[in-house]
Structures are given as structure tokens and as C-alpha cells.
Image 1 (cartoon, rainbow, N blue to C red):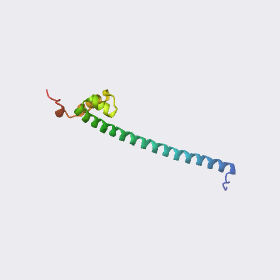
Image 2 (tube, helix red, strand yellow):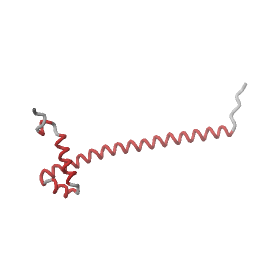
Image 3 (cartoon, rainbow, N blue to C red):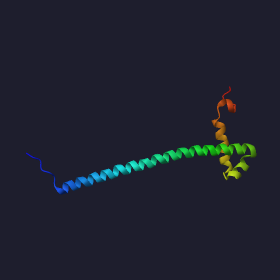
Length: 100
């Protein structure tokens, strides 16, 4: 027995489902492509903020935390935190730690 082709309404319904699926797949790919770009930008921002902190710490070593903070428009506490974080990041032999 030969198979009868589906009705016009059935074909149209399948086309709509297929079109909607294609649209959703494209939207998901585009959405997560932007999410990936955002993640990469966040990573770059972290690196740039660390580089900023290094510059401020060097400046604070020369002119003091208050003056450095005023120069770059950072709160003094942020300059002090950057200095403290940089000292913590140094290897033990460089900051005098690790000796018993």
C-alpha cells in the first residue's frame, strides 16, 4: 500500500516547528557566543586591574599611599590593599617569610 502524502496543514505545521527550532538554535549559539566574549573581557579586566594596582603600589612606595591615592583618584584604603596584596603575592624568600 502506497503511503499518502501528509496534508498541507501538516506540512505547514512541520515547517513552522523546523523554523522555530532553527531560530532557537541560532539564538542559543549567538547568546552563548556573547557570553564567551563577556568572560574573555572579564579576564582582561582582571589583568588590567592588577597592572593598575602594580603602578599604584610603585607610586605609593615613592610618594606615600595618601599622595598616590590622590594622584589616581583611588581611596587610600584601596592603595593600601593593593600594597598589601602585592606583598602577599611575593615568594616567601622575597618578603622574608618562610624562615623558621
